Length: 349
Ligand SMILES: Cc1ncc(COP(=O)(O)O)c(C=O)c1O
Image (cartoon, rainbow, N blue to C red; front, side, top):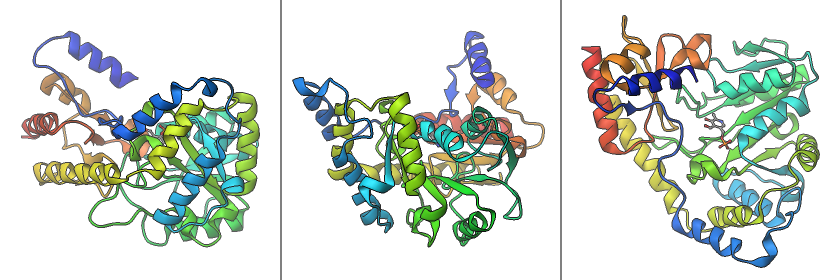
């Protein structure tokens, strides 16, 4: 929000149009057949009442099939899948359903700011991740990571499962960018690790894989007890999700998947461009649609915005350990990206 206020102030100040590389919203929507499924469904007279509170069984089947085919994880659709109105909701519900107030939750730092909100909402306390010796009631993990764009280090999921078993703690793995991985990597689900489903859940979002961020559709999958608690909470809080959105979700999950690969490849190509342009700057991106880079000494995000009219997300917005770093978005057209990179380079000169 503070960044937004500064963007607004800089925009009002005039000069060259601002280049916004701060965004986290996919720039391309879902494929046409998904939009078509939505409009076809919405035109039917029988879809406007309450949908089943816990989601359409066919939608749960569709995500379970995807988990089997793409991530090598067997899910029992009826028992292991909760349908969410977007995974942000699941981030909050996990903290509320898994941890008593006053509990302790380990968070990635730098990490997605909503994790901090979830901990506050549950009246819990957060501690930054610093290995697997911490005593806590729960842990959030996120790979590929927003904002660091890192994929999961070998063995980390396995260690997390051991930690959770030892500590009798719960784990949430946020898999929002799961399909957006580069350099020949395969998407890695937390649930593919032995024992993971006994200690936690994974959130799978339709927002980034299919460009459906505004549709608000996602899933919590894995531990059946947590899935049950989340569904119980949602029965009372939301009373289901509009049926046409769920039916279009089925079309996205079961229809042609070429758009997923196109999206992934586009971000990888832009990532290559960005890293090449930032040569000499410490910068990284193994997945997501972000590049995480260290700000050269004496350059600040405010300076970039006001003097060079390019917005990037300041690292400290993702936690204390993000200070001195910034996140740039690849979810913009090629021309905007190139212009933004030019301005960054001019600022770093
Ligand atoms: C790391 C991370 N998790 C979760 C979300 C929320 O996604 P959804 O649209 O499914 O609520 C986002 C959205 O930006 C995100 O970056």
